[in-house]
Length: 538
Image (tube, rainbow, N blue to C red; front, top):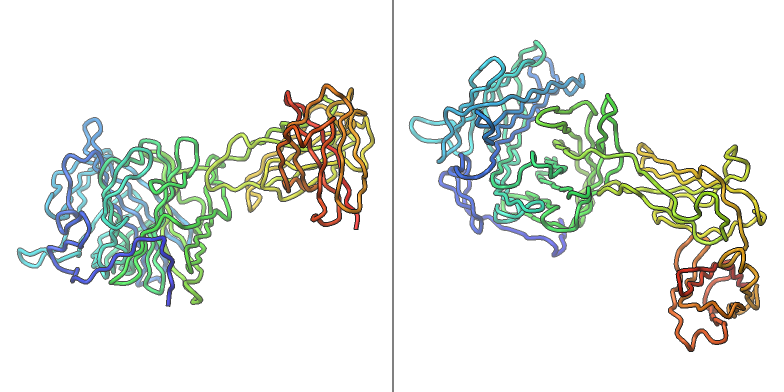
């Protein structure tokens, strides 16, 4: 039994759903009207994916079909139709403009005339018995250059109403009406790459209309998940103009069908990219695996192969996924689809300190990640060379912060040093390296070489953790002291007032710290700094 926290909106459904009209309580949606066309909305789309198996060959296939109402030039919109042989990893994508001779407003009935291709007629309609619509039962036929589908759909579950009401704000400025039909039985005939056979399996339908428009540059990652325990997931992450995923409800949402009585809608989930992959032409980089966690749910979502990419109206990934994990303590498996509009980049790192060609007093090595991206966690390794980059010595590895304290132990004063910082993703697929072009020299610990002898520490080492740091240069005025481990983790930061800095002396009482070596970094008025090692003995 699941024991969910209170960070979600839980909705109960007590009414019978497989009838028309169906008006889910507490929502802004009604069926069959909201299966049809919504005049006046800027963009609308009807989306379906399916996983099916050939009844003659046992081959596993998948497909995606989407009709967009998005008037441009002389067209009513466009259609994307992809076919995949998932066993052979073959993928056929086609995007073409369409006009809609028929687009019903009170129920789902689309007749599409595909343009610039063979001019074929396609349809997605609600099936009928006599003059009556059969609730949530559809017939779809579509044809592209490498195949076709002719399918009967029959919903097995009520619609999943996203974000509780089916209306919410999405991205920077857009709004959307949104629901999913998470499990439909599928049967019919499929042709792909010259092979025609009867197929059967399961499908998913997504319906959206409103102002949110993926063609306007708001990149996102979307997933549907169908688990073998009966739970279904609709997962969204949206990237802002700075390639970040803000921790705001408008940029992240998971809606979960738990059972016929319960939905969960939450913005409070973790979604970590685990591996990345280049497209065959190396032009795009997409995640290949994600770790989804929420409450007692722990799932791994993995795309099957990297070449499942659509090139029009822009390049994006669209393909089937496998799912494994646990819900509570129970193992689960499942299938799904991923739609990925955001392509990642290699990390670019630049050192701040030390800089090329200077004399550097040991202290903090710090750098900047020039192109941070949401969902692409980056780790850093820091190394130095004292033989013109012929070999490298480790300062630190696996850092998540962009700085590390280095005392340059064992490196003599005046030695020429080269610095290398390597940035990498969790799986090391994405990497970027910075190296100093000219060496810097190790200077004395202090403010600069000219004042290297202007600071002293007593006692050092000390056996009780009490130290007095003296700045003998009367022109220096300390304003703060920062205590760091040798790995750069801050232990203490203390602002110095007049009482704490008397006659050029700073008193530190560190008796509670374990024995070891630490770094005290003194911040001066005017932006200068001084760093010194403090040794605490047993």
